[in-house]
Structure formats: structure tokens, C-alpha cells
Image (cartoon, rainbow, N blue to C red; front, side):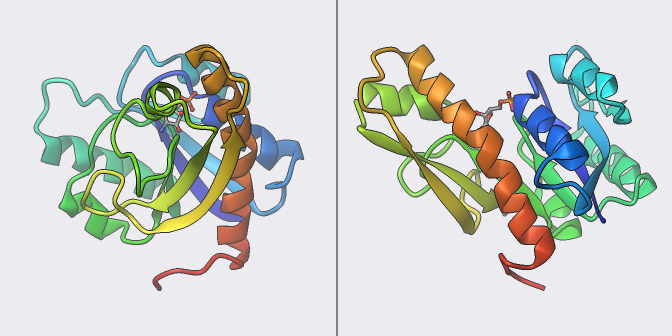
Amino acid sequence: MTPIGILISGRGSNMEAIVRNTHDGILRGLCNVEVVISNVQTAPGLSIARGLGVSTEVVSSASKKRRRFEEDMIEVLQRYGVDYVVLAGFMRILSPHFIRRYRNRIINIHPADTERFRGLGGYDWAFRQRLAATKITVHLVDEGVDTGRILAQREVDLRGAETLAEVERRGLAAEHEFYSEVLRGIVRGDIRFGE
Ligand code: GRF
């Protein structure tokens, strides 16, 4: 069983989907969510995680130097023996110091094709561009913002999606399945990268 930690800042719907898949879905017997860490004390995802029986920790980033914040997170991740750091709606940029510590072991999901759109608002971008399809990207996290190596992409059909809410609904439904599928590929060694 590969031990993973999930970092969130808010809603936590991807985190929830992953945890549920470790309990009775495609990640069962493959990986275990040792801890969910939020940098925001009021993140709704924290109570969802607790309700699913997962340990949670708040590592506040407010009024703290980034180095201190990241050292505190590393301490928690080490305490829980985490092998992979899975970002799911985590709203802080990680410094090279943290990236080096978990090189090739930090994974993120981005709601667009990172080769076409980086940063916040991927669904809004797809909606405004009136794209017929967008691509959800799971990628390694490196020192840049959404610049890490692409591990897998899933196309989402947006034809007939008349509102941003509908674009988000379709996209999130795809994210919830796809993130776990890619994590399964990683822990089984089907998706290979780095050492
Ligand atoms: C998702 O759209 C994810 O792709 C992006 O942030 C959003 C997080 O949603 N990185 P949730 O907190 O998992 O519900």
C-alpha cells in the first residue's frame, strides 16, 4: 500500500473522490490516504475527510514565512510517512525547497490543458473560449506554476454546455474519476517518471 498525503485549501471534492476510491474503488489495496492537510482552517474538505475517517491536520500559511510554513508541512508529511504528495485544490505555490524535498513525488490536477492555459480559472477560460472540448491534466509539480511534466490528460466534451456551471459540472465529474485512475497508474508503476 502506497501511503499518500493530500493537500487541500477548500472544497475538497477531488480529495473525497480519491479517499472513497481507496476505501471501495479502484485504489483499494493500492494506496492509503494517511493524512489530509489544509493550509486553511475553515476548508470544507477537512470535515469531509474526518467524516470518511481520515486524519486531518491544519498547517496554517497565514502570517508565516513560506519557509516556516513548508517546514511545518514537511514535518507533518514525514510524521505520517507519506510517499506521494497529492495536490487537490491546494492554493499555495510551493517553493524550490519543498519541490526538491519531494522531487517527482508531488502530483497536481489542473482543469485545463497546461500547454494552453496555466494558473487559476481553467473552466472559465474554456467557457469564454467556447471550446468544444477541454483537457484535464494530471502533472508533476516542478518549480513553475503548472509547468511540470504532464502525466496524463483526459478530454471533456463541452458541446452544448451553455453555462460556466455546466462546464464545471462536466469537468469536475471527469476529474473525480480521472485523478484516481492516474494515481492508480502511478502506484502500480504503469505510469513511470524520474526515479
Ligand atoms: C479542481 O478544479 C482542480 O482541478 C483545481 O482546483 C479545483 C479543486 O476542487 N486544481 P476541489 O477542492 O477538489 O473540489
